[in-house]
Length: 336
View (cartoon, rainbow, N blue to C red):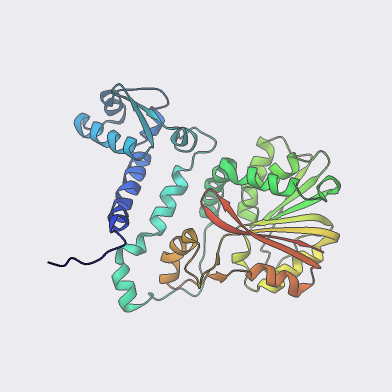
């Protein structure tokens, strides 16, 4: 008998089947608030009593969480791993459980993946309306994500700019809860800053400005950057996960150009640029799959932002891929 010659294996295919189990364990742990009870070593019975769950199945469930490194197990007792302690404890300032749950729900369309592929996207509303409450909730969810690493990464990028010591006024465009902007201003002894976002969102930013005692150095400006003034006289403008909401990218980037002082700097961190004929980065392709299959066009090719920067008149643009906690993004730095 002659067997086929195979120089690959199907182990990767099998591991793909485990991915939904991993996410289900994570989301169920968040739902049951398991991680909030495990900052110290505890038995499965103690966790079951605290969460009101079945003792035997709780132990099996905790073993599953330990198998995917969300818990540590020692002498039959369980406690959070470092990543769970940092990001899955409800009272942590970097808790991202609500954000992860929201993101998982937004991918619910993939449960009908074969139907979407066969029939195409469902009818889309002409406009999408979000209530002030929804916008505020989204901003609060993003705040912990920013505190959990995004803001620290941005500070490192901005503080390495050769212009940094001389910067006096910055704008965080589409700044959401404002943590990124607050962190950049706090890292500079003399800089002042403005958080620009929708009116419902900057109300949240004002609360964080107060929480961090930055009222004398930070202010907010509410509006829609597609049609409203974003102010002027800035030495630095940053836009993190923002420009995908531009209805006309050149118009918005030109508005940024005009708002900067001479020799001003524009830093854009953009998460939706595709490479390799839109098959990479994996985090972008998979993260956008649900939205694109349901008819929302937020895919952009690599260099989309940099090309616009050059078209509107920036004298130089430097671009590079940047790997952050949740995947690869594009970093573009433009100088006026």
